[in-house]
Picture: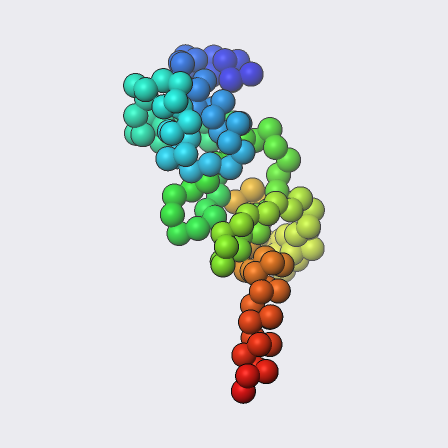
Length: 147
């Protein structure tokens, strides 16, 4: 598939491009540094700038997407996955995925009320996971009982 997409745009399939796309596929969600580390296990000569350039190209070709799951670098995932929304816990950093249909109401409302088209693939919602919410509630309850 990668070779066909590249050829259709007049580009070559290089070993680095193949390794980087494979790393994104295998890692699921990964930062450029994580992709670089995975690629470096197979090919030591690939530098981080090559990874960034290749990820940008792969995104332009529609093979990977990125989202921001923190204040740090973007996180990439393969387009072969179903489009999804990310739930990011501010406490433990856990990332959960929801099907894009989970925000259909919001997406439709924004389209109708504002003419705004949401890029769901880039959507990340920040809050607290069930475990951290429960732990915080327990902690708050114990503080209340000591007062």
